[in-house]
Length: 110
Length: 115
Image (tube, rainbow over all chains, first blue to last red; front, side):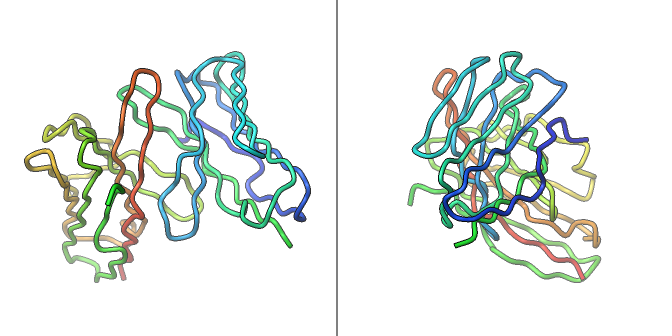
């Protein structure tokens, strides 16, 4: 049973458009991470958010952790074709184990 | 090489055969985790080690699965009597911790196909 629900499951946009991916849970997490995964590769860590209400920016990517630490969002501004990939959110359980969402497949068309 | 290395990258095996995967973590990371990822899903936790000690195993890890980490360095994951349902990507990750800042480094995974 996955604790985190990601939406949408698939997202296809034109280069230059903005997009937002959502990650929701009924559980409270001590921290939450976002990863990007390319086909045939392992996930690569993008960011860790630990404080409720926290906002982190990584160039064109903005990550937000909900006030209650149950949800998060990833916003990409002016998407580029290089942003194409599977985006995964993961909540931290005890002993640093991660509970992943099912992922959002983002396709940015040229 | 400062990354996590997994071998082999791909494995095709017949049902009923045994397979073994290897993971070489980042040398200074003392925690090592195994996850399994099936198509269209996020990775699911299997087991983890603190140095050479295996501290937790998921219910997903049936008695056909065994993992070791001798001397707290590389780790192996063995699946005996493979079944088609074992087909998945097996991911290894090592963990660095610095207070509230921690980070997983995942390997590229071993893609297992059971035919």
